[in-house]
Length: 353
Image 1 (cartoon, rainbow, N blue to C red):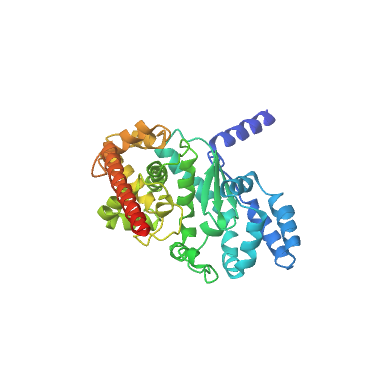
Image 2 (image 1 turned 30 degrees about the horizontal axis):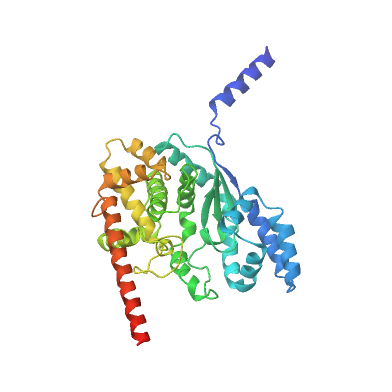
């Protein structure tokens, strides 16, 4: 009888006590420790052959699937890591302590993912990997993996950029925004990407893809976006919108709107995030069923031009429907091409004479 009571009490205890691991995302931060162990050995020698061997054997080969995915997505090589380590010693020294905080963020990240599940109950599980990259990404995704570039995502105002070349100095503004304080928001943003259909090589679709993730993560977390582009865009919406209308059908403009420190007219990177965010915000505000609106945004088929066009036009965000803007852009391109040809003919006639 006593044994039966013990079993019964134990069963009741297990049933009534909350299981804190339920619903928690799978978070892997082992790559950070591997990186710094390899880093110390790399910086102890000036032999580049040895450095490459250490990085390959002690970091990359032992790395998680997330590290290998990050390397694949960002095309990182052993040489990229070696060059980053050798060229920016002050940067690495300034970021090291911050990266050690990754393992303590699991509870906060779990709460963030649970908030996302509240606004999007269909949420599928994904794994979050804290990797250390070669300085080309603070975060991305591949399939069901969230890939964090800890060397950027965990930066703050004390992170040193004095060694960076001119084309990387735009990171100063990003670091001054103290991204480590918004790391959970970043992870939720990237988590949304794992739920979306594949992105295609189209500027508007790319901006919408990022805008959906940013808007949904902000709604889920109940806090403002940490992206400087959102604040700038809200204060200068017409200026940004008109510039985008001119560029959205022009090849080669992606780097001026997304994922780059390339100079633009706004002195603020990633303004495409604002374009997508503002479109989503307009759609959400006009929707009676907010949860259904979020579901529709996340599940947009980015390979379906008609679906994307209908979604964007339905918000009335741009000055005209996309079809009209496209025709207008083609007419402008034809005029520019015609003018270029006339100039070329005139130049040839002048040089012949």
